[in-house]
Image (cartoon, rainbow, N blue to C red; front, top):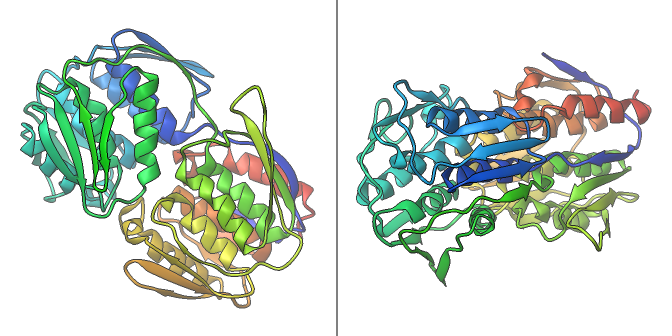
Length: 433
């Protein structure tokens, strides 16, 4: 499916945030390890979260998925090894979080994935697990999936490099309560995407286990052996990553967009986008609910946008969003701390450079930063290379450019299946031209 996008006038819209992908993944996996029946309400129904649910089912977990409710029959940490490989597709979160969990199965487990997945690094996590009693081997490129996961999770002192992905640390933390001995997890290297680790520990606490944080420089957690997750009833909060496109839409069209269903106290790192947009010239207004975690936030722009210099190492999933807003600013933008974007669903630094240059914007990139120099925008064709965030972010820029085509636009089902339906509804009411 291809999408052709015309230029629009200012957008004035109200949209409900989709459920969080990060929280849905973690709730599913931890509920599967709990000792009892859990309910996950208001889940994200997207390709990636369905992949996690199917993988858990292959490991012997009974999961009943209804429209706004998932019932998970926890196994108490006792999983079953399937006879065939589990295909993770393009879901990096599923691959990484489940790698440590698969050590709880009663035999070897093979995890495989798409061609791109087989290029994405997982070596630091495998090394940490092998040092802790696992016997994980590669059946393809060394350091990348597919994996054959065998052995046990012994525990003890576990050191893991967090400079490529925080998901390596989250994987260890989630499985650690079922190790044979007390586990002490130490993070080495410069951590990226640290808020996602807080999401993990927060979800563990919801299900009855609070890792003891011994240190923050470096990060060290201790998890005693013999603990088990308790069944819980959990409601998934709104997703700031997916909401970022609507915030950006207000910025690029000089309009006003309100997003409902967001937790103002969320641990999601992508909430920081609102501060970035405010510094660039947008107005941010919260209407916070007193009785619940659900509130709404309005982003609007009336004047010019200014470029910004910002380190986005802790919110990588909204770098592309900031990049497309930067393309319509008056002055250059420099984004740093983003080396780990090379190993995402695509090389996202290259995706930003290629996409913006296609539309007439000058970019300068290195391994860890990108500089965007605004200029005269023109129409063009964007191929997202199966990366949902590239497709959605450039769709937003298309409303300011006009005559922009997104190829393979269906890739957004990875995280936001309703994106195009909602985009069309908003775009048509904005006076497209």
